[in-house]
Amino acid sequence: MNENLYILFDQVFQSEFNIVEDGSRKIIILGKNEEYGKMETYSLFPGIMIAYIDMHIENMEEVILEEKIDSRILEINHCSDGRYAYAVGDDKIVYFGKGDLCVSIYDLTKTISDFPLGYYKGFEIFIDIDVANEHIKEYIPNFDLIAIYENLEKSNGYVLVRANKKIDHVIGELYSVDERIKESYFKLKCLELLLFFSIADLERSEIIQLSKSQTEIVENVKNDLITDLESNITIDQLAEKYDISKTALKNCFKEVYGKPIFKWRKEYKLNYACKLIEDDELTITEISRKVGYTSPSKFSQAFKDYVGCTPSEYRK
Image (tube, rainbow, N blue to C red):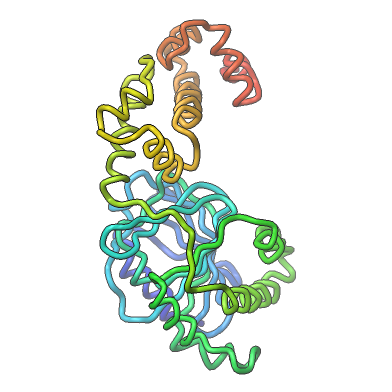
């Protein structure tokens, strides 16, 4: 079922991929040996498929082509980890992250899509509305997928709901479903999510939208932050360099990466330290200096607070 949806992957993936069938599910392997991750998919109804996504992609252009497709596709996305970016209109980009839920029109929100953190986990429901509409009406009389699609077209192509208790309730146990009831449970949750969005306010949105120039500044700032990890660069210096207010810089950076600038940089340093420890070519003291710590003891404490063990224990 839904071979028409699987064919779409030929249009959007430019990297090597293959589909492995395993009972009722199909696993899409991205790149050689899951180089870019995988998608675990299940057909729910004619025209509707759910995919559990686990991707680690630094450069989207290596993997995904952002081209128009022939079918009218709705997507329902829930993020369990990482961050994702939608381009909206000609000059706006919207970011969503852990716990957020979004319904969108594929062709209106797929240009300049990105995983700012280099990884993304969650699920996505793909809906070919012209195939699925009549089948869904068998379960929900008077429900009209086409009407939802057309309303979204008038609302920038998406509705994004930030993480909250209501979403947690709607999503429920979707990430830990017993194998014996998966297919039936997925179908029920798909119908519930469609009902949820059918009563969402499609006209109003308080979501922050960044311009392309703002995202470019954030990208440049990120590169400055990681080019020399030993430097004590300040927000004042960055704001002056890129001619942006400190408040705007902090807000834009957090919107893209989901964390304040120096919290993000600290975690980047410690993640990089993990890689250096695994390489086993430098001493712990040398690594602490390389990631900007003048005191090995302070580095050891920060590392333990973040990783859960000392650098020396991590190396064993």
